[in-house]
Length: 293
Ligand code: CCH
Image 1 (cartoon, helix red, strand yellow):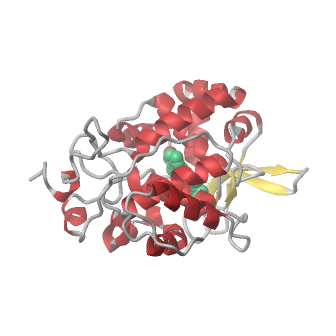
Image 2 (tube, rainbow, N blue to C red; image 1 turned 30 degrees about the vertical axis):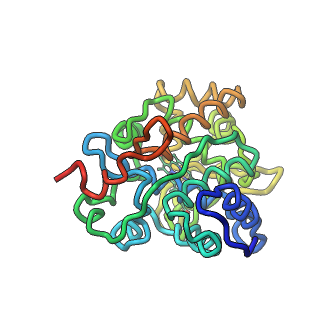
């Protein structure tokens, strides 16, 4: 990590310091990357196209109402990893830092280049989060295809985009003390690939009830002596014929998955944001109550 302060707007300097913190030998599988990707997604995936509320402006997870949403359990680890970067580059907003960190983490894990633009603004207090109830909007892993459609259509995404985004589960793992689920989806959870789709569509997944009563699906990989897992929502992608078409396509074609993922992830980071021709955000006010009385 550099210790020299950067000029306002020098996102390359921030990128360099995010890259420098990704390697974390003592943490999970040795990388902060996966939990940073999850932070970026949860900070954006609250968007509601009908009311134009939620989305990646605001960084509302710093406040109890959104930060305490059970869906966000564990994301304090990601925020803590990024604090030293914020300290060195105090001009960057949290909402820019979190989304940029997600993009950098994907690229550094061997994923596609993610188009990213800055300019997001942070809430100055939690008034608007409470007013617009920016919690309880993220998907519930115990549910199925109907629920995924309800949640992601609300953000403005379609079936193909839902499946492409789900491919992020090639990174990271579930933690019993965060979501209640346990384990990684793939054998190499710090490498971005289309492995999630390959395994989902080719292995025989068996239901398993954890001691806590949480139900997930597992496959024991004899070669690596690792138990891999799938969430009920992951399995629903295979069970639903429209989703399954894309699961199989992405499992067979890594380039197609990378292309579609890069496109949809960068749009996820832009949810709730409108820009002018120069890329300047014109509706920093949307969640601050500008459009909604
Ligand atoms: Fe996810 N995800 N996710 N997910 N997720 C979890 C972990 C990660 C759902 C549930 C869970 C996306 C979509 C969904 C990541 C990225 C994305 C966990 C375990 C649950 C539960 C949390 C824990 O215990 O730590 C559900 C339901 C959906 C519905 O679609 C999307 C979209 C993305 C990104 C584009 C990443 C990365 C992780 C790993 C985090 C880590 O800490 O390793």
